[in-house]
Image (cartoon, rainbow, N blue to C red; front, side, top):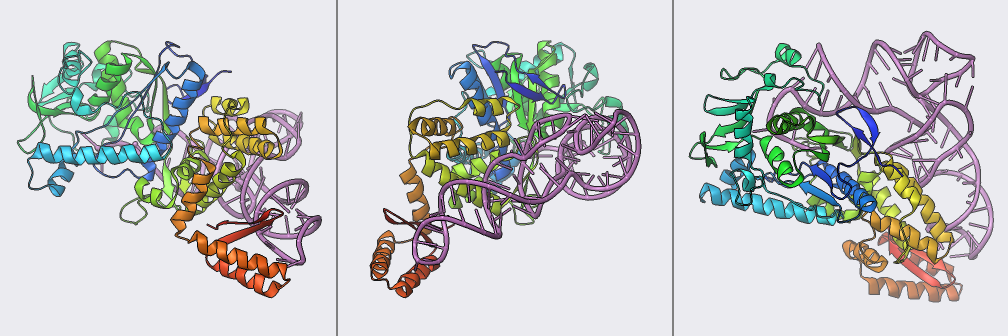
Length: 464
RNA sequence: GGCCAUGUGGCGGAGUGGUUACGCGCCGGUCUGCAAAACCGUUUAUUCGGGUUCGAUUCCCGACGUGGCCUCCA
């Protein structure tokens, strides 16, 4: 079965053919670690985790290399460091900010059921030439200058966009249009408005590295070119990230990497996930609907957030709502119940088929509903197939009992008290005192408990 | 202004040039002391206006709505 992926660069869905089936290479732009990640940041992490899992399924778990960088040099980080740790030396303050934020990010995405990438390089480890000879930013910039694609001006090193014939191919921008529509005041030292910074000078209050161009720090785009080349080579298979990164970030990565290496492509497939709104509104701190992953994890299991994210195709916008989360939670409650800790089995072909069509996760979920019905009605083999499919996708990470207990714990309800009330109700029913039994049922409902009568007795669960 | 996405039933959300998506909800049934849960079943849609076609939700053009990028924001 062929995996087909939509490529932003060629604007078409193509059969995926890796450069080397023994080492399939994927790069995704990771977080800038200056603040808690919000739910929008979680989308690419989850989407490309599904892709990672698919590639591992197809080519083998040891045949896929997934790199997701951590951006730990950025002016927003500097601002945060000065604000939060005014007493400390800058470098120490920056390290505190980046380490705390990176650790939080790691905890967040673990809870979302995402596998760790093969490598998670930090930008600051790739600024200067390295003992191990892996690609670094300074060397890359030197190569760009040597090949006539970059120039020094005004204390900066800039990329010369006019030196690249097809600059702008990814975002569909032409240099002439950019120039005509440029609203931003052009820095006098730039040869062309779209030329962008590779290296800039640092003041004493800013982090800096000694380079051939003096003490300074790298521009935003060059880090990804360096780290991608360091782990994946000059040309690799798939590059992913959010839609907003197409321009300028990915456009400029392409320019840097291709011009530095003299190649015709940086990655063969460019994939971009859509944006997310919260309750129908743009997420922003001012409107108060800025939601961090961490906050959501206080109210919902990570798998609920994961399922909720996958209900929509990765390329479409998502409206993130509490109603949607409630629906996802209900679905997972049911799936945990039906899968009943079944072990063994293989993922269903139809799940693989759905994902093979450009990660059609809504279709995949429809398939899972079908598998669920077979599992509920069928034998252990059907249950195994259902459970294995869920596990392959990053669900069912805990036992059904733990899943149920977590919900009860979160509600703060006293299980012994509930059991006592249910015993009273059972006794009342045995005496045909239905007035009393209904009264107890109402009391339980008021506590947020739903009861289920069956031949084998009465069970209860937390109503959401 | 330029570029790029997107618009499906009460809600979420796919596929498809002609026939059931799927889930939630609603409604009906079985079960139940009555309910709930579970199971079975029913229901409702393709933003608008043109065009191509025997036939369009699906292809083309336009309008309108929504979102993104064009300022180191996933």
